Image (cartoon, rainbow, N blue to C red):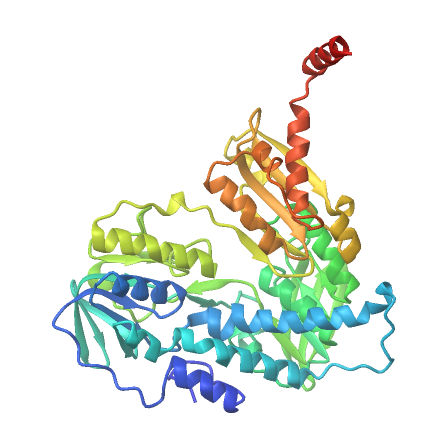
Amino acid sequence: MSPASSPPVLPWDSHNQRLVSHVHPIDWQNPTPASRYNLVVIGGGTAGLVTAAGAAGLGAKVALVERHFLGGDCLNVGCVPSKAILAAARAVASVRHAKEFGIHIPPGSTVDFAAVMERMRRLRADISPHDSARRFTELGVDVFLGPGRFTGSDSVEVNGQTLRFSKAVIATGARAAAPPIPGLTETPFLTNETLFSLTQLPQRLGIIGAGPIGCEMAQAFARLGSQVFLIESSHGILPREDPDAAALVRAALEKDGVKLLCCGKDLVVSQHPNGVRIQVSSHDHGYDHVVDHLLVAAGRAPNVEGLGLEILGIQCDRRGVRVDDQLRTTHPRVFACGDVCSPYQFTHAADFMARIVIQNALFMGRAKASSLTIPWCTYTSPEIAQVGVTPTEAATQGIAIDSFTQPLDRIDRAILDGQTDGFVRVHVRKGTDRIVGATVVAAHAGDLIGELTVAMKGKVGLGALANAIHPYPTQAEAIRKTGDLYNRTRLTPWVKQLMSRWLAWQR
């Protein structure tokens, strides 16, 4: 039902059978290796797939090695299944709040959790051909399913076959890591690798970690009907985000019924006849709860074991493979990209790191990872999207900034949609309109942040965005109005006095 050392694919229904038939066909026969490859890619997640497809498309002879499932975390246990569940949870929330729009839903409406999860599995299987072994073979890539490890400075072994290379890429990604919590190793718990195998709704769900995954799943399961306890050792949630943005999401989670236990101390978990017992202190108050399932959403670990990195002297640590700004490892023939070496563990970051590797590994390029402008988004309701620096980061880096904030409760479309909890906040270098960072909190913040990312990358100033006509009414008008806020600062008392004299003279 799944490759050795992978979590089992459950339930073994027609959708999961179809998924596996694409991403790790049970009857797959590895090809006869070429005499030498321009590029051998170890890891078939986003970083590896983009590297392999892009290099093959440019005429390179490429081998792709994957021991588990092609598509990696994103397709199988990450972005794709989680967003399908979030979409269902948003639909539930819309029904529950329909009366705010004058729509009365008959009482007694229920959530069919099994159907929600069945839809997720069906959609995941529908998407999987894009990452399939067959598709990449058709693209000209030699696909090898099995564990790959370096055996020499120009060789990788897979199931007894030797692949020789001019250059190689490590793109093995990362996995959920269990934090050192007393009792956790003796207690059954879920991670993102097993959460999406559920077929029954947990009546009580405990979640450790209030980062993006923890917050998204806490809100989703609460909306679907679980009693959710979200535990975080820090103060508040989403510590990487703008505090004002995190506060809005926190309020939304609590409105949806999530019980937040932040500043959690003395956390202990243990098995219980009815599930998992959680004991924790939060704000000097002790809590003792039994939940049906416990989801651990705190921490990631790079997948570096068993690769034979020591044979080539490739250095790594708890954060992953060490690379320079051009994504070269400490071995001249080997590069790395994606979650195995990046502090930005996002699918889109892995995609663009892969493009840098193609340039540098095959064409002696000098492209740098530091040149990437990487936005990210947490898909709660409302969403939080961020690009560039926050005020805290700007202060740390010695960047003087001016910030301009446009609340959504002054944007007509947000008012009409009933989605006024949010804002657009843009940071510019002090005294200029050069954008150095931005935060968007909105229903579709992940879509809105793209405009600000393009502006940063293209060096389009905030003042220029004020002159870009946006359709009315859209929530994107908040970006234009943020530009208006900047332009008003240019109307100094002296300029205003000068203009007043000119206009008086025109009368």
